[in-house]
Image (tube, rainbow, N blue to C red; front, top):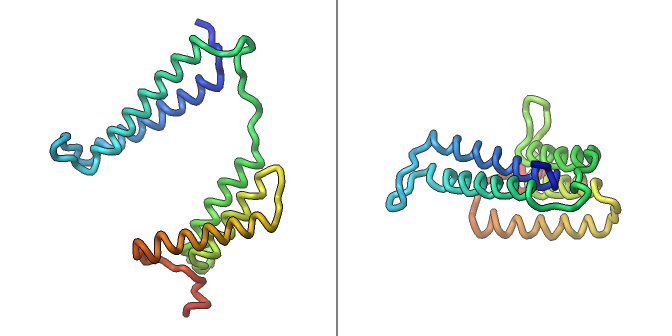
Length: 162
């Protein structure tokens, strides 16, 4: 069989691997049954569904596709590294990294850093749009997590709140 769509093949393969890993990891918890679900039931079910969906997508990559083969392009290293860096910065700024001497900066500063760093990965960087997006995400996150769910984590930098 000839591969007709590289994009479908590799994305389906990724789904199979991630779904299989989740399903396998869920077996370390008590799974239970449909009447009495354990903590591993839902991740196991989602992992199996994701793996099955990936299998279907992988199979379709051999059956249907464009005449040229729907090839995968080159890796976009700049956006990939900026998005990963944004997530790492968010985690480090939210609660701090004492081993590296980074104090906790809280939710608001972490969200602003996340949005600014991740926005650098796009084709255009418009400061006004980025600041408005960060502000909306900060207010929404505060409302959802701190006000409505009453989760306990730092909102403001430690040197401000004391």
